[in-house]
Amino acid sequence: MKKKIAILGSTGSIGKSLINILKKDKKNIEICLLTAHKNYKELFKQIQTFNVKNIIITDPNSYLKVKKLLKKRKINILSSLDGLNKIFIKKKIDYTMSAISGFSGLKPTLDIIKYSKTIAIANKESIICGWSLIKKRLKKYNTQFIPVDSEHFSIWSLTNKLSHNNIEKVFITASGGPFKNYPIKKFKSITRKQALKHPSWSMGKKISIDSATMMNKVFEIIEAKKIFNLRYNQLEILVHPKSYVHALVKFNNGLLKILVHDTDMTIPIFNSLYQNNEKKIKSKKIDISLLNNLNLENVDTKKFPIIKLIDTLPEQESLFETIIVSANDCLVKNFLNNKLSFLDIYKILSKIIKKKEFQKYKSIKPRNIGQIRSLNDYVSLKIDTLCV
Ligand code: NDP
Ligand code: MG
Image (tube, rainbow, N blue to C red; front, side, top):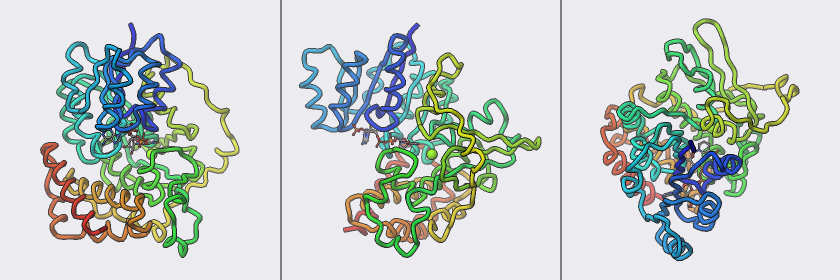
């Protein structure tokens, strides 16, 4: 039987990597749903390749363009992600990829769990802000969850079927981004173009900036804590510019397991899709010279003070994580629009989250998506007014 697949965010970097994997297995898969925001041309190509019957495209202009392009075809075209319920009424899909960027990914991720046997989640906002809601739905609908980010996929692979009680410590690696060896005195004049140029990974714009500031690692520590039910003091970051090792897990039986793979998101995505080794992937030969020189080191917090935010996070799941994500999201947008300098991102972020009105959220647990969304709107508005 054909594997039924849905991709939320099929036109993005993660979505396209998955599409490329699926192209090599066309006869065994059926794509039930693709979603995009603006990139109707890429979506159109994907529809043609896979004969997709359901699509959602959320940008109004792109929706109209797609409608026109597909007017003679029998394709269900929706303009809102709230329409998921209209699509999945019959059998559960085998594999869903949640790869929309930003907060817009949270609601559809929660909604689609009900219709999925397995959900692979790349969208960070879902995990950081909505983990308790996701966990509840995974249990309710008996859906398997697989993290897609290379570090979390590695931890998942190393610890799969083991209890979190067996884990002593988890180390996630960081490439160090484009500014690892850049002189600190030049940080004030870092440009958008420089910040977008990641040395080892090819990714969407937002996550590339988060890698440059190293906020991405703050997010990954929060995600790892939630997914694997750990304490913050069990998690550490190691800088590893070659990005060959993705995670190291020290178990309390004395074993240390390390997961290594090429710097290519195709590998975790491929393995989340084919869990039973039923398919082969082409990968590079083992690079012994890289293995001999792993060069793992601590983060330079003078250059990347954003890492210190981890020390301010509450152990229990709270809405404070939403504040950090929203504030950073908005600051990155303003940096990309040339309204802020690179250093302003951390400067404003650290100032904002210290405010009493936000600190109080450290003891408030997220109860529903409405609460997360309105807090996100409020924080974004607050930052935008600071940036005009
Ligand atoms: P991209 O920016 O490349 O792609 C984002 C996708 O989401 C596109 O399909 C885009 O549509 C869609 N989208 C954007 N805004 C909206 C919106 N408002 N409503 C609906 N759809 C929207 O991101 P990535 O693929 O790089 O990342 C996706 C997620 O995965 C992010 O949360 C990221 O942090 C996470 N991630 C990414 C990694 C990577 O290597 N890229 C690694 C680990 C995690 P369109 O293009 O048509 O406008
Ligand atoms: Mg990562």
